[in-house]
Length: 355
Ligand SMILES: NC(=O)c1ccc[n+]([C@@H]2O[C@H](COP(=O)([O-])OP(=O)(O)OC[C@H]3O[C@@H](n4cnc5c(N)ncnc54)[C@H](O)[C@@H]3O)[C@@H](O)[C@H]2O)c1
Image (cartoon, rainbow, N blue to C red; front, side):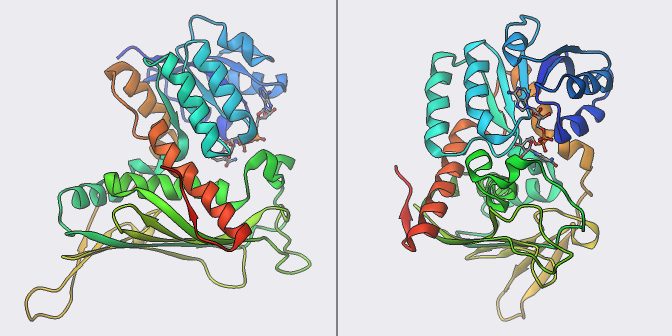
């Protein structure tokens, strides 16, 4: 397959890591890098094997050699850059969070309708590529759990290492949307949407958020002005209810627990399958027997492939003329949950996502 010629916009932490994983002769070739910080762009261009360096992303978009862009700038720039890229005739792979509101996704969709051959995807799809996620999706789609009525998704991560620093945009809800909600939430919801498929039809959200706080005088999270925890009940059109909880940096141990419950069987797995937790746990009562647990072994994730999944998936989608595993339609749903969560947290009311 002819490699897809990418332009990279934003040469910060994640784009640099991504560029370091590119394989010569692979499905993707970086031909230009644009960053307002020329030194950062130059460094990434060197890593990518000598791409052109630009300081204005409009120049990159004007380059006819470029087929697709990878946008890795702070989140408040994702919408204008995606729209500019579509208008310039480029496919888009945008870092997460895709944008800041559901309306921003709708605005992008409107522009995409003028250029329907162009594909748009978000890197919140990274974890679609883990073997456990794919197997869980296939089992649910194949009816192996029966009617799925309940999902419990709980992720708790530890305190930040002392001395951790973040760029200022991460501490500004106007630039980042929120804190942990917009940092990890897109992965959570995209992963759930991938596994549940058509069952993921969020309609009502009742939720709370709370900001980070110092754990001790020494251990102060680098972003105190944004949320560090969320808990929400998401009710779907079909009656499926999802408990979504994510907390970080608190006085308690890390916890990773995801449960899918159906009328015929249950499934436990980890969002990030690591070490002993990389398997699927299948539960069922059969006749008069006690509850039976079956551990379904699976391949360990290849983290470099996971990091690169969305970029490679878009490249394949372009060459195979198919939709990527995360689409604008998915992002309307995902961003609808964010809007509703923030409104619910503000008003202490359940909030309905528009049809
Ligand atoms: N850091 C991570 O571990 C990580 C992981 C996954 C996803 N992400 C996501 O990737 C995106 C970028 O995160 P990051 O940590 O790499 O940020 P960063 O602050 O390290 O890098 C952002 C880059 O964008 C550049 N930039 C800003 N305005 C620009 C403009 N107008 N034109 C061109 N370049 C411009 C900055 O100069 C900087 O080099 C965010 O959406 C983030 O949520 C980050």
